Image (cartoon, rainbow, N blue to C red):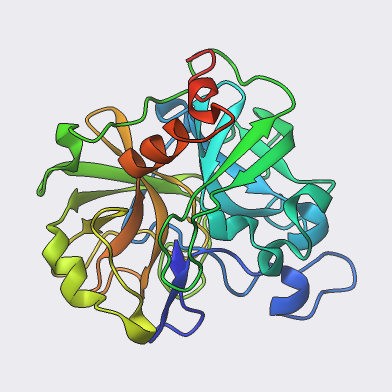
Length: 290
């Protein structure tokens, strides 16, 4: 999730490169000091329970301590992964995404350091041209894989009228991010149960300025009013799922699990609408092999 490096500020929840976050050890790159948010107040899960949850990786940029994981993603087609646009930012990757030769999607892996699942090359990246890095609106990107994911590793996207967007709907967020809000990163996949919250709660929490601006048309508010389970650094781009469908992508917020500072997610119905209008027919290809 997009969180500020200082918790008093709001920002994307992506892991910072090890080379810029802290000094590297001589033998092995150190774990990143800051990352997109991970699941706080959650519980470990096996990836078989959410096979569409994937990790984004670049060992050259982020080191091998956590298999190079820096963001999350979600498979909406056998060769199509959604993630947060800010995960593809040049400040994050150190170069444009098409110039990161070891950019990979890790699929079917619960423990980042295990040899289960597979690591698939990213053949093409498409960042939403309407993404606003200052206001955080339109925070999504589409990754096209060089090889297909296994059948059954895909989740459907919720359209505009899907009941999953209703306030108080139970939802689950998945990721490998910070589990405490203080830099304790999970080596294995975690999940947290949250609720879809009223848009007015996030509008009040994020009216503009340093805390960011919440736009109900393109964003989704989720968490708990009193604080508690939440996404955190290292979870950006990962899935928020309700009633078996993808409703959100981890995007940004203030702190992790704080009261009156809910998590903000990219609203997937807006992703669908944008892709449906893309001139290259990108949305029509999204559910390939679903």
